[in-house]
Length: 159
Image 1 (cartoon, rainbow, N blue to C red):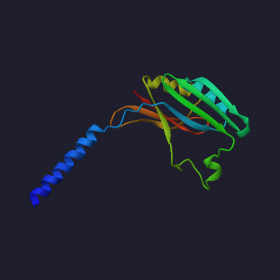
Image 2: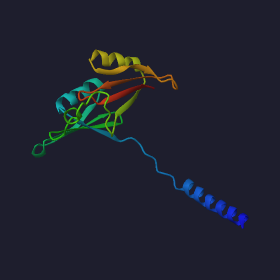
Image 3: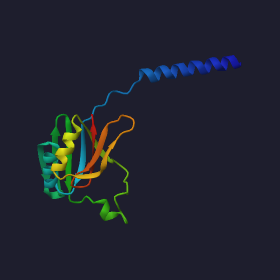
Image 4: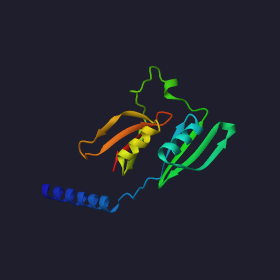
């Protein structure tokens, strides 16, 4: 009886592992990111001037206080949304400070081939840096975080 149980367990495990191997999840590839912004005009200026994005299009629905813009750089798409009814965490969370973390997206990251050239460009543009440049102890690559006009974190990684 014990031998039959072992054989049965082996058969079930074999069937399950075969199913798991044949039923793979299809590939994903990055498509776009979207961010709520306080002031569309300043955000458009910031993303085009500092990160080199181009504005693909802009839309506005005045009746609901919505402005929306799609930006592109290479194969990277970013959607910016200004919504008058949106709230800032600083305005709705008591004792909110820069150490408070909200559930949800935390930051966006980009790989760059010439890290130092990017740092020089960002410094000349008076971009706000969040912390200092660090080196990943595993990869040995440099990284730094910058802030957009709304305090969204953007991490730049050395390729």
